[in-house]
Image (cartoon, rainbow, N blue to C red; front, side, top):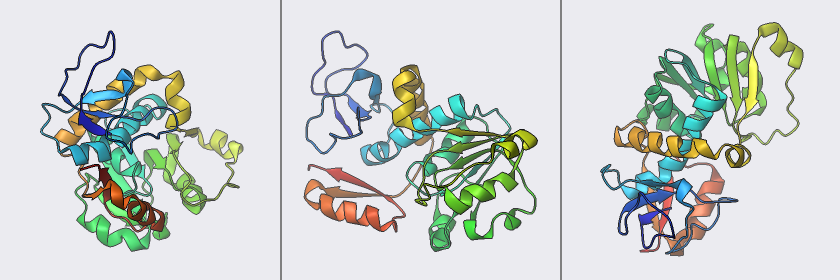
Length: 261
């Protein structure tokens, strides 16, 4: 949610009434379809002095914050390492290239379905290259990556093992393919000295609340510096059904933001 602070709870410091902020949603990620939202202070970040459009901020800050948590605490990305992001234009995935650049990644490559190649060619996200996932792994001509972000699963996840090297980390961050029967051969991880780790923000953050604030602050900086730009389509609350239908079609190339105005 994005808006302005209407009131401060007892003991809350660091914010002022009228200040422009973005808040993550608590619990199951619901409650944002409202004109007034009671936020937990730990999930709120100021955009007052950032010159970031509120629609872009609300569309990208939560995902960018989660990308920061995943890259720093799960993947443990080191400056100079290379990153591959599957489903490169997706909601969560699109935040990874900007945060990876902010953390010093030397190369960031993305993959998309064939139908997304035109959108990929026009994106302002800081990828070095975006390729057709159907052409993996051959199109990469033997290139290997230190960190792979995979919110897709299925066949794409299988192909990732050929793109890893000793010390590589594959972060499982979703299952857009719907392949719930997928399995990883642990002996292959042992023989290749590779790591596979899961990242689910809903499971990770309750036990790591200290990670939220650095993630939110890094997200604001990344967006303000142009590292996380994506087109945003703003619709009124009255068109929420249309917004959901467009999301479910999986043909989106932009982000949808709802507003009560």
